[in-house]
Length: 326
Ligand SMILES: [Zn+2]
Image 1 (cartoon, protein in one colour):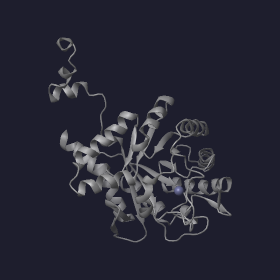
Image 2 (cartoon, helix red, strand yellow):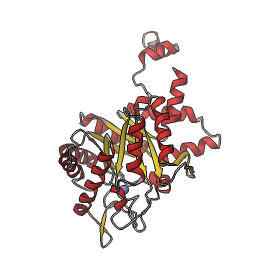
Image 3 (cartoon, rainbow, N blue to C red):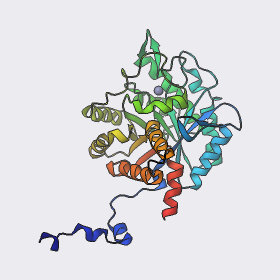
Image 4 (cartoon, rainbow, N blue to C red):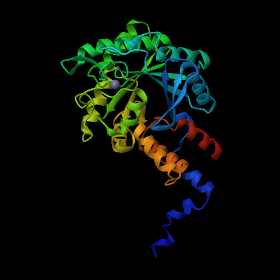
């Protein structure tokens, strides 16, 4: 009886009708592709827990960035494995380190590309924690001074955006101040404002060789049970001068993404992290899922939840698939 008037299926009758009423779109322009750069030349080594992701020397990182740009992906985020590690992670602000050299080389090869530098210390410290240690405790305010050096060195190398991922209190304000003092007023800050202490980072720690040598990161990263606290972190980072707000990980936290989206007027980024990627790749390798369909559906879900920017290891594949569908 009711079906005579109320038939939502009318709006799904054909591909053209579905295209007309589609609410959310996914595009290569939404993506940021993460790059792991290592010392040396002509290196391209697959990361075991992240199939089709590689440790790249600077020359090959440039090639990957060029490929992204040609596919319509506007941005890459650069992570690094340094030549040396020490107590305070000083290779993180060494201008001859792979990250700084890669940022410079990518900007030279593809000047229009938005190059993001990941600002943290865990890949560079001998203990694998994200800051300066005082008796097994990461000292917040001493760490801020180190993060300022990292951010300024990346801006000096040519980064358009610096992205602090350490979760120290006050680091956005500290980095903004240091960038401005050094004359980099137009370098943006993409803050990992809402970063949970998550099991989904496992494969990345292989990739970045950054697992802590003792303890965990629960004294600075957020408790996965908390959502109100996410809004508090976002408010603080915006007050401190963040330009883009990130939620990390993505998949298990899409409710948080939606709450953040509804709360602020800044661009919202999500990080589709290594564990989320590895699960899809493992299931696809076993023939248990249709990889293309699952990836595009997952990325669309992040977009629908409110993300403007998606940092994802699937970026190159997804951009190719989206092109096929045009
Ligand atoms: Zn870190």
